[in-house]
Image 1 (tube, rainbow, N blue to C red):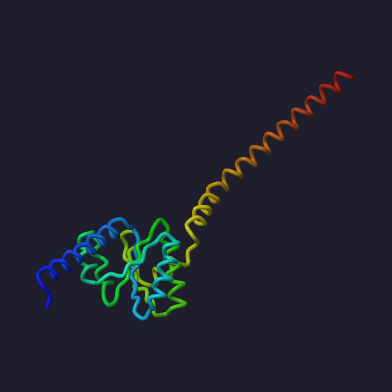
Image 2 (cartoon, rainbow, N blue to C red; image 1 turned 45 degrees about the vertical axis):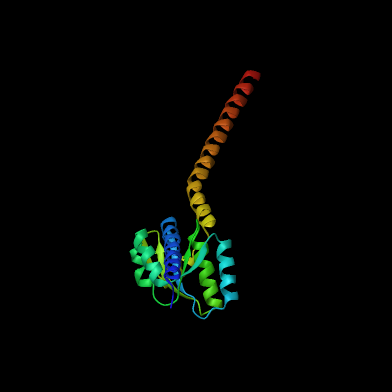
Length: 184
């Protein structure tokens, strides 16, 4: 049986975990929930390291504590995903990179079961996470958008260059005709 001091310490530790998870939920627009049951400590460490490289954090959380934190953070839509052994991946600036790491790791280690998550404020299922993982990286998407926006401008530059070249040729021809007329 636990003493009153031990119970108070446990309560304090649980409250600290709830506060930490609440802040992580508030500070992250995108997060993914998965079941890590069956993964070894070494595999979890490998997954954490890969996610860290992509700017994400992987946190194993008790469902009751995660539920309280989700409620405090205003992320109650996560509640259906909080059952069984739960790990939450808090994404950084590039949720696609984190989704790719999780999807690739789940392929190599089928014990990792993606449940879904929150993308901005929208609840996504496991297939949504896999679809997100199939997108090109953020930098590539930005480059594609910039390229698409730049294409009409480069076309305009080409047209303007053609007009200027034509004007220069026309002026040169006029000058040549005047010079030929002045010699005659």
